[in-house]
Image (cartoon, rainbow, N blue to C red; front, side):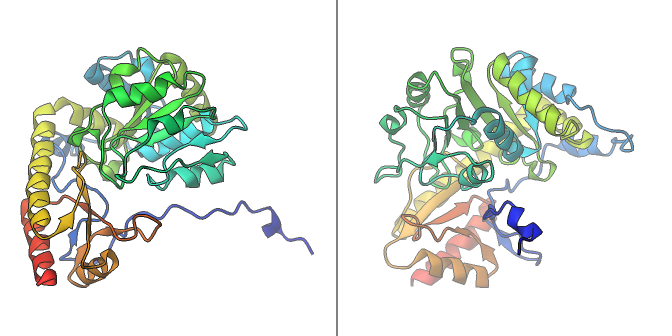
Length: 349
């Protein structure tokens, strides 16, 4: 006999990094920034009022601030509730043919979830043996392309010339470049958005701007791309971004000095920590992100993960083909990374 469950859309959901509820831990598993947001943001939040009112559905104050910051027109900017919301809206808007969209086999694991949820056919070209994208794999006929640059969880960045090569070979589809980590050393493709009307660049405030809790993401592209995305957004939910996010996100953009200072602190700690773990026999590609992708020949990544967790140190382990002996380790404060380094040294004695 048929039941209501016969018509349920069944998907395997994306699983984010663990969010432990215990105190006294070192949390290096979700790529959050270890430093607080700008003091200007903290001060501004004390002034928030009128929360009884609906927020501006167009988030105009934030859109204008982003347009000014990136020196583009405001109708080239789309904002959403974190870059996940922006990416999901882009999938919904642009990936509607019967052709397969393309994204790497080792990449952000939400892409295949959205593709399955929205019944989008997809194919995942394999990264090479050094975990690099092979641009020629994206030259053939397809229904669209999406990839992070720098990639996650590998931490590897490709130059803007590499991105342009892929976009130039795919002018009849939309190419989405997910730049969630670009501020930590990657080369942005934003300069290409005026040249290619099919390129969408997606960013987030969650990493480099220390505002993961407010869920602010945005995209920059041609006016035509942004109009199509807004048409879908306003047909789905007009009030997607809350008032505090709009106001505090705008405030963050005003304090570029603090932004650069905290980004540089993360980079400095990353480079120091990488050099130290290489001395311990770890292998780790040069990172352009706020995390490292590391492996050791003499001890399994799963074992390190479990023992670190038992010592209240949380890192990310992916039990998946090709990367099941790697850990993704977020860069915390220098003090946190020194404690983790001490743990690794004791483990390898």
